[in-house]
Image (cartoon, rainbow, N blue to C red; front, side):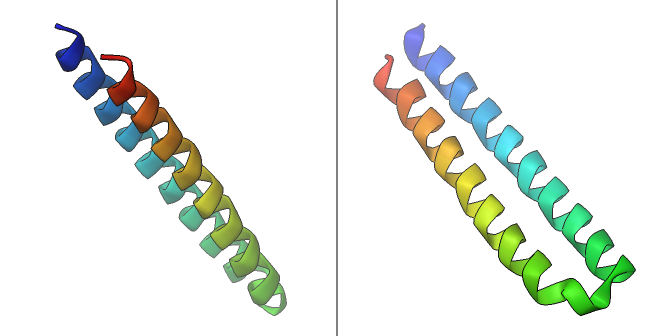
Length: 68
């Protein structure tokens, strides 16, 4: 039973991370389209934020699997 809950939790973490990174990419491209001269700064911020989202998602997935 707890293995099933851990798998569901890991799946939810993956979906949440995918949505978060999609939002980062979409809003970043929108920002670059509005202000092309700031593209380098926006891309740098996008990469940093995507890495932070991935780090949190990995941490949460590990917690889900360790809790069983």
